[in-house]
Image 1 (cartoon, one colour):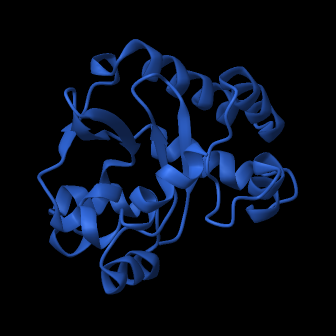
Image 2 (tube, one colour):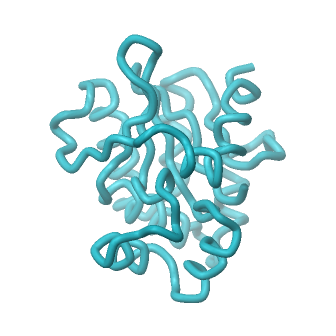
Length: 175
């Protein structure tokens, strides 16, 4: 059920968030809530291990399935593995690691509830990136991919969402 609640947020994450209220960017992972820090660290550990199957333990421990596709596949890890350009799924793990090593965006506020997104670029207007932000974008996407993102009007490359309680909510690409 949670996946259906999150889908409108993710679908609108491109152009709608880029035009919405100002997004707070966080540079220091130590400022994240402890549960978010723990989930981020667990995802980074699995990504660095090179074993995509390690993501299953994170999913099982939290008891809910993160959104990995707007089609909501039955096996999220299998889907991510199939999506990778290599048979072992290491390309997807590299994308996950690169995103989580970027600064994060804080969505919402403590009163209404927060969520945290990586890379922070996913919450910015791609047509208004500073030179420093463009360099960050090129760490994640090619020149052609960034142009496609700009043409679309929102970040449609991979992005990660973690809730304030540490729930890994999504790792998705697309609009």
